[in-house]
Image (cartoon, rainbow, N blue to C red; front, side):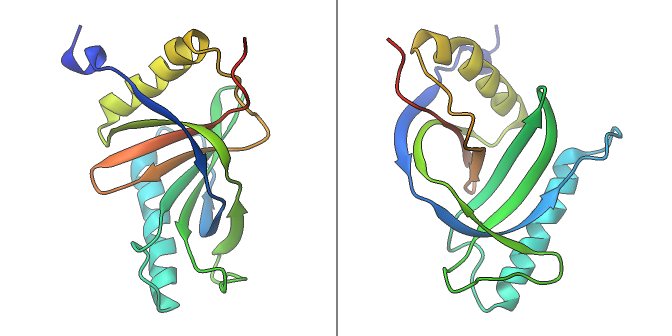
Length: 160
């Protein structure tokens, strides 16, 4: 077992605020490409747009919104938090309100091996061991920081 696999999961249950965000929706085309690079370009596009508005895109949260269908990635919204005054987008940038509420937050290093293993372990180990009920009505978020990320899963009340 690698050191990464042996790392304990860092999970907390937190109330996240709703976030007003500018975004570009990325829809994977099904071809084997570099999804990481494609998503990175979408984030750069949103950040450039936010700069054009006169705001620092790194002053707020950078968030990825994951939508899956039958376990496969269907779309990924590349979001940057913007002031509430930004009510409409342009140049393919849209505005949305990301719902807040109660989330299980898995904190981890931004390392693909750590992220994949951490997410797998969260669903396979943490959810059943802690009787977590996932709220499928709200999206899963990835909140990015310089060297870490938080994988945020909406939850209801713990099952007894």
